[in-house]
Length: 310
Picture 1 (cartoon, one colour):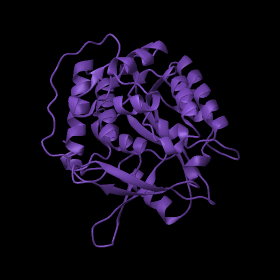
Picture 2 (cartoon, one colour; picture 1 turned 90 degrees about the vertical axis):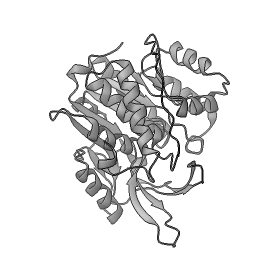
Picture 3 (cartoon, rainbow, N blue to C red; picture 1 turned 180 degrees about the vertical axis):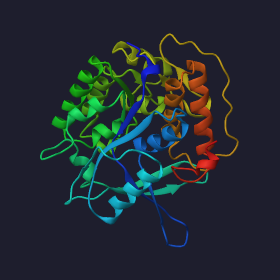
């Protein structure tokens, strides 16, 4: 069921914010704040034009200086941080980005004991009722994979209740194999999540890798089999494809020089969601997402300067 986007005022992005280290070539790594759903939150905040709309972030942090850095970044980007669990005995995860000459990147992670992995676990002040504060909740496969199986499954059930009460769920599977117990769990969890999704934001490569598919239409048909029939299938330089019955025929310009593909999908998600919430038709939302992603991959790092976002 497609919801009424005109009523949306409060959006939550749920997941893990991390400290990003980028090697400057002189053994002095640059420290940034990033993470897939956090990146989307930043770009979504920049692209929502209605002053009555707010973007919140739901996660868990510690009381260390890296957690303070993340809280300062949320404040800087005017993202509401009042729904964050504080765990004094934990700290955020950290990752190092290595970028190849063609712009493709690889990552090294230190996140096994991150605070975000404790989200929704007792004792807690942020429980599943936090969802009731929002009109839209956006999360990713990473948001689910970092949680224990019991909490993960309970979250999906809570999202089903959220939808039943009129909420809108947006989901990007953003598959990271090393975060999952095994491929069977990843497949089952994602299919359960797609069945509770109003706005589907899959990447064709992720879906094919996870489910062993070789053709784009196989991905679309599988998603449709559980009701994920509205949203955008991300296809890199080919541009996005509308899911379901929203037949859109338009040309997407590929970027001449890709500098860094970090946050390509995250920024597309933000541009696309902002377009829908702002009242654009499917074609306009797809184009806005692609245009924003194209700007991001021509700069280094997950979050580009605000003046380059325009």
